[in-house]
Structures are given as C-alpha cells and as structure tokens.
Image 1 (cartoon, rainbow, N blue to C red):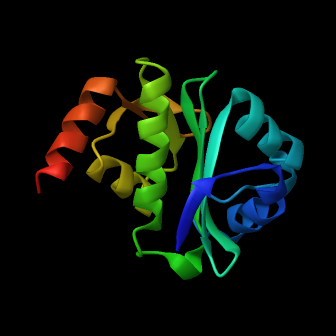
Image 2: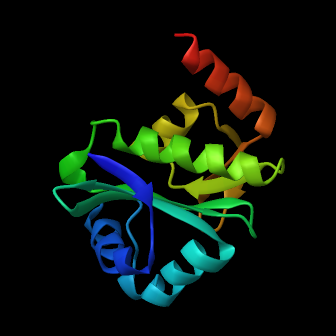
Length: 152
C-alpha cells in the first residue's frame, strides 16, 4: 500500500474510484470532469492517492481556494483497511500547513461518511447544497485531535 501526491496521470483511475462508490454517488458522473480533477489537484489545491499493485484504490483532494475538502473516496473493495483515514490525515496535515482557516466539507446524512467525519472530530454546522450535512474542522481542533491520536 503506497500513499503519494496525485498527479494528472492519475485522473482516469481517480474517476474509476469516484464512480465505484456506493454512498455519496453522483447522480450524473459527467458532473465531475477530468478537467475539474486536474484543476483541483494542480491549481486549487492538492490531492493524494493510495495505490495497491499500481492501482489507485482511494484518493483525497483538498481545495485551498474554497477552504473545503473536495473529495475523499475509497473503492468499496478496499473499505475498512485504514485507507480513508490515512488519506484524510495526509490531506488535513497539508491543508493546515498552508493556512489556519477552517476547512469544510459536505456529505450525505445517514452514511458511513457522516460517521467517519464525526469520529475524526469534524463538527456539524448545518446543511449544504441539496440536503448534505456541512461539517467544519478548525486548526485548533485538528491539532488537538492529532495530539490525542499520537498519545493513544
């Protein structure tokens, strides 16, 4: 299992993972284009991938311009192996080295993603878009969570 920064040659495999998920699915896969992915990993922020046997099985993308988490997905065949957590932590460690501004994300209610983010210390602050829950993480909460995790 290898974690590394995402690059433009990863986009096709990132799209495969994004469209394989069973929760937080896209109503229209054409809504997230390859050009969108490229913009988010090269201009707006940065992305990371997890590879197993040269196949991308998970990815995360932070949007520094919008101060949000644009994506964090793991292929369903690789659930519950700690991949999402590692991608999450890489992304937030990088994000908070760039800025002290709080970061937000949206996710569908009553999903494993909602449980995942709550467990990692994200705070629900309302709704976003079409009924998604909106969560935020501050630099202080992230530092406290990271310190707690390191002492366990």
